[in-house]
Length: 100
Image 1 (cartoon, rainbow, N blue to C red):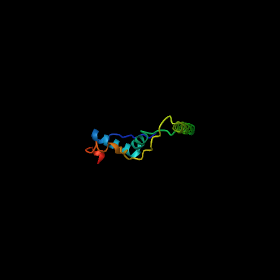
Image 2 (image 1 turned 90 degrees about the horizontal axis):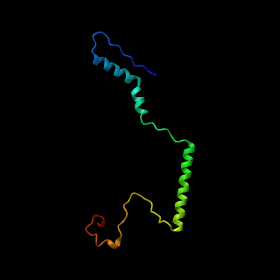
Image 3 (image 1 turned 90 degrees about the vertical axis):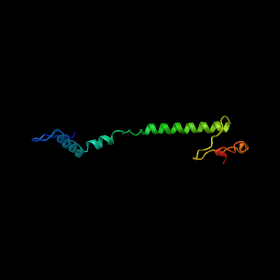
Image 4 (image 1 turned 135 degrees about the vertical axis):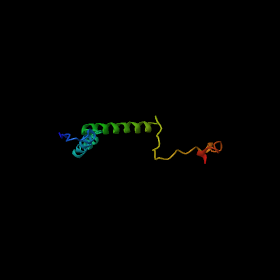
């Protein structure tokens, strides 16, 4: 534990004493370490990571099995592009920005 202690000397004003204290605290690095630890999040343990990975693998296998059986339709992978508008409706949407 680091203590930052300041004593008022002579006819020094209260504000200058506070400034002196602030400088002393900054010099110790207490504020920097407190701000660094403010949003600290402990990492997940190995067991938790393994369980999460196994659950993900199981979920993917079930999804692929359902796609194979035709129970659900496969969703295309998202690559950051907008889906294309169907060509059959292009005449009715000529004025829309998507058709341009």
